[in-house]
Length: 227
Length: 194
Image (cartoon, rainbow over all chains, first blue to last red; front, side, top):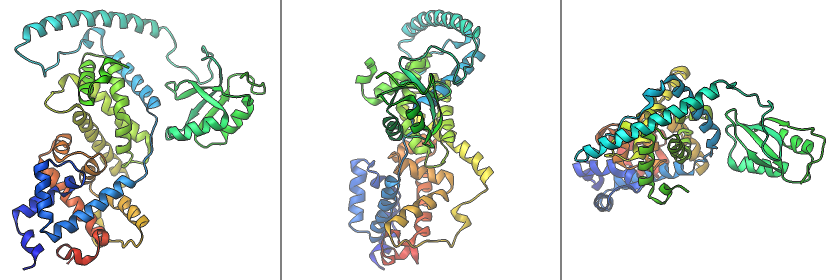
C-alpha cells in the first residue's frame, strides 16, 4: 500500500484534510497548525490538496474588487429608519434594557433604567416635537428645487451608484470641480468650481462620462466662475 | 474623533452596539460606515448589481437597529452582524435563483476545463464558484475572501462546526473535479482523479 493510501485511511488524515482551508487562511491555533504541519510532511495526498486550496485562495484574493461609496446607501437607510420610526408611537420607542449585563447589579441597573427611561421619554418628546415640525413641511424635494445652496455651488450632479472613489475623484479633477455638499437622499452632490474653467466647460466634461447620471448648472452656465 | 475611536475595534463595536440598543442613531451610522466596505466587497461576489448589495446591507442594519438589545456579549459583534448579513443574503440569493432558474455543478457532472494559462484559472474560478450550491459558496467565500476561522463561520452560519467542514469539503471537491489540473500534475492526486 502506498504512503498516501495508508494515511488516507486514518481518522487523523480525515481530520487534517478538513482543516486545510483554515490552514491556508491562517486562522488555526498553534496546536492545530503544528498538527497539520506534521501531517503534511508524511501525506502526499494532503500536500496535493493543500496546493489546490492555496491556488483557490490566491485566485479568490486576486479577483478585482470594487469599492462603493457608502454615503448614498446610508441616506437611504436613514430614510427607512425615519419611516419605521414614524410608524411607532413615541411612547413605544423606549429601548429595552440590555440582557448581557445581569445580576448582581440589578439594583443599579433598575435605577439606571429608570433614569434612562425618563431621559428617553424626554428625548422622545423632543423628537415628537421635531417630527411634528417636519410633518408640516413637504417631505420631498426635487433635484432643482430652490433650497439654500451650499457656498460656491455651481453644479448639481448625480453619479452612478457603482462609481468608485478613484473614478469620482478623477472625474472631478478633470472637470475642475470639488464636492461642497451631498449626497442628498436622492444622491445629489453639490459641486463648486476649482478653477477658472467655465461652468459650461465643466458641465460638458462631466456629461461625457457614462457614470454621470445627471448634471445641471445651478446658475447661468455661460458665465465664468469666480476662482 | 469620538472617545470610542481609541479603543480596539472589538471594544469599539461593542460600545457602539450598546449605544444602538439605547436608540442612538449616530452609533448605528458609525457601525454602518465601519462595515459597509467589508460587506459590499463580500456581497458583490454574489451579485453584479449594486442595488442588490445595498438592499442586503440596509436590510442587515435595519435588523441590527431593531435587535441590538437582544445581542449577547458571548459572541463578537462582527460575527453577529456578518451572521445577519449572511442570512439576509441567503434569502435574497434564493429569491434571485428562483427567478434565474436552477444551475449548479451537479447539472454538469462531466464538465471540466483545462486551463493552460493563469488568466484562465481566474476565469474558471469565477465560473466554478458561481455553480456551487449557495451554502457551500458562502462558506468558501467566508473563509477565503473574508478570512474567517472555522469557529467564526460556524457562529455566522449558526451551524455546527461539522456542517461547516462538510460544506467546505464538498465545495473543494466539486471545484477540484471541475478543474482536475488545478493542483498540479494528475500524478499528484491519483486517488482523487482515478
